[in-house]
Length: 496
Ligand code: HEM
Image (tube, rainbow, N blue to C red; front, side, top):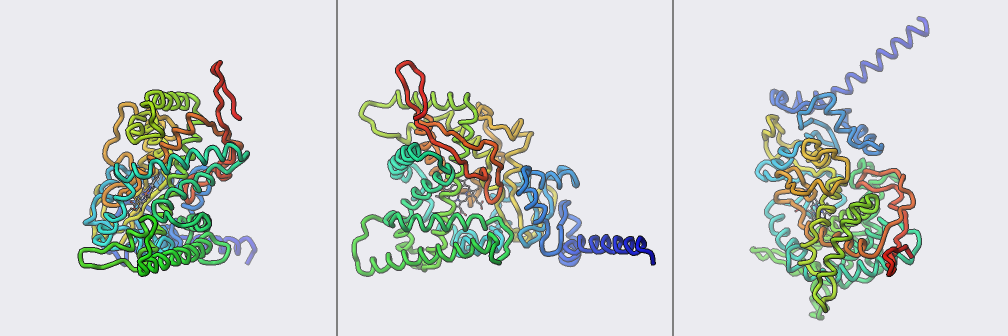
């Protein structure tokens, strides 16, 4: 046999193996397990055995065009809005339209949280990601009120403002900084104050370091081998749990000794909590709730604040208008009033549009996960019981039918515009709506108020490539300088 013929046979062999492998998931999950129901699934492609569509997802999200992942479905199967996939170890449906996303998020009869098991291992199976609806309702009520609502926000306002002012002053004297890293430290300090107010700076710094590693593993492939992000994340979780366990033990001892705690924070509230049947939370539950809250409560606001400041700096007209609004607020302040009030925050109409536009363009949570509790029809397709649902916020926020020129940062698009239900979901919707949404907006507003009035950001590497996983950020964590703006009687100014 000639060499050419042999190469030809090998090629045909490779093509046949490829053809077979590409159909294994479809045979197993659709033909064998669903039978006739498979005809009602949305179009799509379940990828390769075991790894599914993860290679194409990771390839797109590690490139400069993450949306090429969804575009490949749209190009192959049309604008159907729902696509079958196999991701994070399970068959699932990606949902990309506003209407379908809202339906999934608000229909607790048919959907429950469906985070990949790798995420559940990292955040904790007793956190909100994996508990029953009844438990969730109780724990949510217990924890959400103290972080949201007028009364709670009034309590934290001064702490937030004092820390923002101090941080900005400090950074202005530091020369080159990683702006995002510093902001994450700031937002972590704030969430620590709410949850673990009496713990030392040392503990705070130790926890913050572990969270950085934990987060890198959240959207990574679940490969528990040295060198992989997921392996490091699991190690970080172990360290976090050890630190938090020591704190819970100490607090319980203090309770037993009846030694007076200086001040009650969320940790004390969790230790004291009792449901209507008299059940109290055990250590593992308290720790998992803390792991989740401390994580959710600082990464998101840190990233969003960085993007808002960066967008302001890159768009001088927007900066000018936002700054004028803040100056107006200070001018109208009653004599003797020290610091910001919630009433003033509510008057920051333009700044609120800047923040909403940042939340839309950045879409911190690119997707959230649900699982179908029973077969359910969404937009004319069946989502089978047990299949995961990936609510794809990025597609909703970049839909050109709702947002003209969707990738453009343009706060004025919000002038006189109220998105229809489901078209703007930065904090999700339904029973899992982010309980920290008001707190997050408050933190960002307070920061931008002082930033706009007194500072500017000199971004040292504006061409820095972006990373999209786990969250969108410049690869260099926004290396730059914070400069204090010094006003002169003649009107001009320069950075110190
Ligand atoms: C810009 C800032 C923030 C963004 C973009 C954001 C986004 C989100 C989104 C999209 C969800 C819904 C998850 C789902 O549907 O499964 C969520 C849930 C959650 N967020 Fe936030 N969040 C932010 C700030 C915060 C803050 C400051 C806290 C802490 C106080 C927090 C705590 C939580 C918690 C505990 C959940 C789970 C809620 C549940 O399952 O009931 N978030 N967040």
